[in-house]
Length: 410
Picture 1: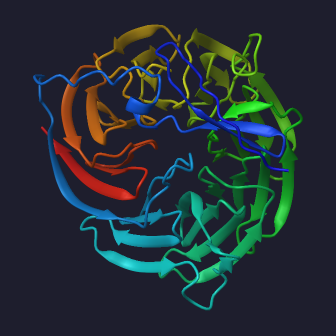
Picture 2 (picture 1 turned 180 degrees about the vertical axis):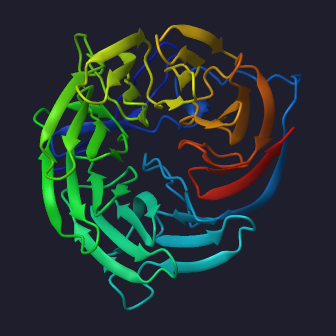
């Protein structure tokens, strides 16, 4: 039976969350609430003067429904073959020409005779994805259904009902679609039909977790995923059998809030190594084959990691941005000018890192020293999900579905 309760969590800078309990397990959400109404540190004022060495031009902007709204879903566009795909909790899913922003096709839940329909008084609410590979686009919903469409024209392909809401992007690879549901299950579905091939059931479900899920990564026949119990797991893609698991976040303390240990942000797999970071835990590099730690670095992060050829980038729980050495995990620089601005997941574009913040600003930082080199404003609303990089263009989406395309140059 569902119930709702409210609490506040004071992190190092006193960040407050609303706690929502569902089916005996609680999730903490709302870290983009109005700072004036919560007992949290105000965002650090932005520096008026900086070395604006990267030219940024907004190429186009648009809006898709109302975006993720305050669901806690990390919704962002998906890019493939010159097209951008985006979805919304208001039931919209749309494809755009990535160069111009022109709509190529658009579908609205409940307004056609296909398999998208109303459930009682609520329309289907997209919340996980979209993800695209070849001619397949998939997007999950708060109702726990995964829908598949043809990437070319949006034609209905199939749908699959899963065990719980889907608030992270599925992974597509080969003949498989991998989906993480909010109750901790990971599903392997047939790409052509949506039929269930296997399901991984997490053995330990914490009583309290942050609102959010790490998106699975599917690479070379292995599925990698971060979990709410502070572990990274590797599963065999053919049948979902566990290959290894490794703890990055231990979550120690007297209360359930003290013991929060989620790995909710994006993980990265590169060169046979898995990179991830946990809340109230560590960032770490794990051998992809065995899970054995290569290095760990003490830092608490909810926003995941991004990598370049030589560094790992992440922001901590106070929104300080770090660069760690890819091979050793040693700290190479720290940028504290965005502290308490509750940054999005990071993305790497050439010689810069791109992040969004709670006031709709997009920041470009130099990978060499972390200094700010460009800044643009998408909107006045929070940006949670990682920007999407395609060559010299970055696509950014805020939580209310505003999308901007920014072209960069010297």
